[in-house]
Image (cartoon, rainbow, N blue to C red):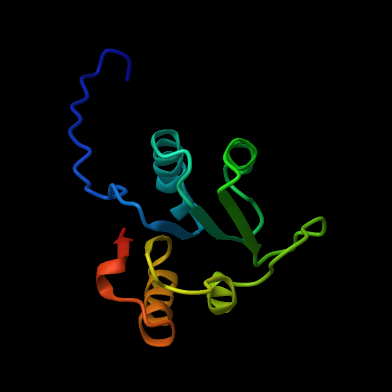
Amino acid sequence: KKDDFLELTGPYGKYQVNKTENKLLFIAAGTGVAPFRGMIMDYLAENPKARVTLVFGFRNDFYFIEDFKVLEDKYPNFEVMGCPTGESKDWRGLRGRVTEHLVELIRDNIGQEVYICGPKQMVEDVKSILLEKMNFQKSQIRIEEW
């Protein structure tokens, strides 16, 4: 109620982009894209020539689509790929779960860091595909677990 006192602390997370020369790949589903929005914006502002890709799985709403389009226009080295699982009549491009497209989208794992955020099962599936089918090393993968 009005005039109530509220005490807040944090944030305490350490999920941030490493300073690196490597290519960065962000893989998100649902609201897992939220932390990536700020991370990608900041990283590209500091490293405008860095190669950054976002693969985003969503049901019906592509969160922050306008922000990502602005980044794509400003940084030709930034690419965003959406992948709806729900009814999206006007959508052109990938469809289905992001896990169905990883092997075709990721050409190689050399010099690449991967950031993953989303529902637990998606995170586990993506990590498994990267490690078991695509020969990524654990040191290349960074996960935000809710």
